[in-house]
Length: 601
Image 1 (spheres, rainbow, N blue to C red):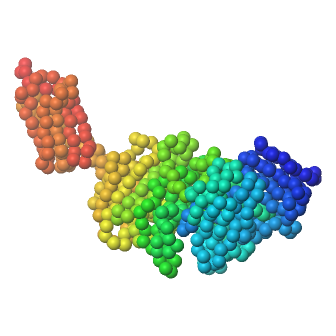
Image 2: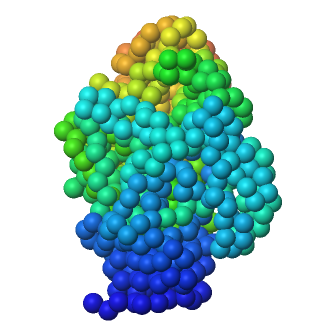
Image 3: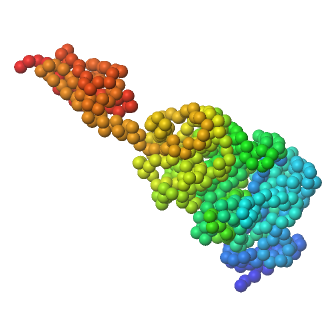
C-alpha cells in the first residue's frame, strides 16, 4: 500500500487519498471548507503534527473495521454550542486522546480549547466542581465540569454518570455540557466570531475517531450516543441499518428553552424532539414539548413555549451532535460505521442538519419541497398551557402496526400530567406512519390530570391533498369536526381517554345522511298544483328551496320541523322547468329538476 509521507497544503476542493495519511512532525494539513477522504488510516506522527479542519472542512475515512489511527499529533475541528450557561447541549466528541496507541481513545473536556487564531488555540480552563457557570471572554474559555454527564444503559436501567473533567468518555458515547456566559469577539476566519453572545465555539483537539464504533444498548432502555466522527453522519442510514436492530430505529434530540436562566431543575425547561427516519426520503422530526423537573429528577409540570416546528429534519448529524437511542426488546449493541459518514455543511444543508444551538427556527412553507414525506401535523393545546405536536406520516410500505424506524414512541412516556398522542399497540406515540386509505381511522389519545380545555389544531399539511378533509371524531357525541375548516375545542374532565378520539378522512355521519337523503322523494303534481317532499326516514330537513332555470330563487322554506311529508303550493308559479334543492341540518343536500305546468289543456 502506498504511504503518503508528507502533506502540507491548503485544500480548496474535495481531495481523495486512496492510502494512509502520514503527517510528520512540524508539518500540517489545512482543509478549508472541503472534504478529505482517506481510504486508510491517519497517523499524526509528531507532537507538532497537525490536521486543521476549518470553515466546515471535514475528514472522511474508508476503514471498514476498527480504527488504526495513531500518533501524538492532533486533529483540530470546531463546533459551536449554545452560549447559555444554564442550557445543556448533548455532544459526542469527534476526537479522543492522542497517543501512539492504535485505535480510538477516550475523550475528556480537558481536550477542548478556544481558538485564538486560524490554527492556534488556548486550552479551556476547567473550573472547580462547585462553580456552575462557564465563562467566555476574549481569547479565553472556562468550562464548568459539574455539567459533564454520560447516560448509559445499565443491565436493568439507564443512569446518569458524572464524567466531570475526567477523560472517561468512550468513542461513540454522548455527554452533556452546559454553555457559557459572556462573549468573545475573536475572529478566526469562520462565519462568525468565537462567541457573539449566541453560540460558543469549541476547538476539539485530539486523535480523530474512525472505523466501527460499538455502542451497547439495554432492552427498552435509552443510551446517549451521537456522531463520533470529524464529519457529518447520516443518522437515517445508521438507524435503518438492519444490522442495528438492537435499537428501535428512532433518535431523540434534547432541546432547551433558552429563556430559562437558572440551574434549578424546577425552573430550567427542556424536552426531547423525535426523529423518525423511515417516513419519506429524509424522515420526519417532531419537536419537543418543554417541561421542567422536580428535585428528584423526574418530569414535572409542562409549560408553554414549545417551538411550533423546528426547521431541522435531522437526517444528518453535524460534527459533535449527541442524541438518544432506545434499545429494542432484545437489545445488545449497535455499530456506528464509516459508511454512514457524509460531507454535509450546516450552513448549506441547514434544513437537513444543524447542531441544536440558541435559536428555535420556525418551519415555513418556503422550505417544503415535493420530495418531503406526505404528512399531517397536529398541534394539541392542552389546558391553555402548552402544545403537544404529533405527526401522521404516509408511507407506502407502512403497516397499521408498529414499524421499526417509522413509528416513534413519545419521549415523555406517561410522565406528563396532560398530553396527547397516537394510541398504538397500547403505547403513546408522537409519530405514526401509515399507508393512506380514506377509510382509515387513527386512534388519538388524551390524558388530563385535571379538568380543563383541549384544542385540536392542524397548522399545516405537507404534500397532502388540500381537498381531502381531515376530521377529529369524538365518540362521546358521535360528531365529526373538520380541522380544515376550524379548530376543535372542548372541555375535558380529568382522566385518560384512549378510545374517545380518532383522526378520520370520511365523515360517516355525512356518508349516512347522503345515503338517507336519496330516500327523500320529490314529486310535482301539476293536477293538484302541489310540490310534495316525502321524507320516509324522518330526516331533519333544514331547507327546501325552489330555483328557476336561471338560478334565481323563487320560493324558500327554512328551519323545518320533523315531518314525514311536506307540501307546498305551486299554483302561483309560471310554467317551466325548476330546480328543487333540499338540505339537511348536517349539511347534506340534494337537487332535482321538476316541470311545473299550471295551464289546463
